Length: 177
Image (tube, rainbow, N blue to C red):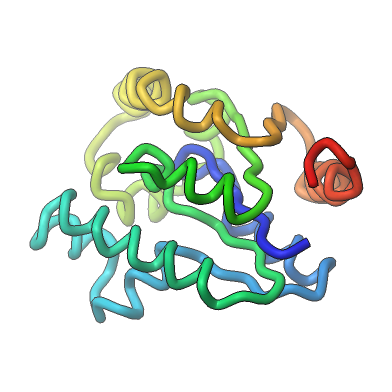
């Protein structure tokens, strides 16, 4: 394994699962949102708010390219919108194994704490019903990008350990090499 990219909607568990996978694989863990914040000295929400989405996506692409250039084994948790911009999905597919963590809007809404909603600019101020409606529309628009992943996991009610086991087993599949 060189690089394992976790893609999926915000709040689906990419960062939490990515840390677990990195530990189990003895690989580096890279969270693209955290790297954007390190580079900019501001939160993702502030970069989005003050510099705009286009600038945020450019910074995010720079962070992705840097993570790919770094070399070495790494589990990379991507921001929810990263696969939808430019040719990012194709770039990740060329550089390693992409895994789409698929959850329903209702499952993600249940996972998001009030803080989790507040730190995501596009979810701020939405009540439960508005949140699910927004995510349903937004996820439908993103699905064609996420679907380009080499491996899709229907997370449903699986635990993080069960999902990690599936991914680790898939790393040994010749068809995914």
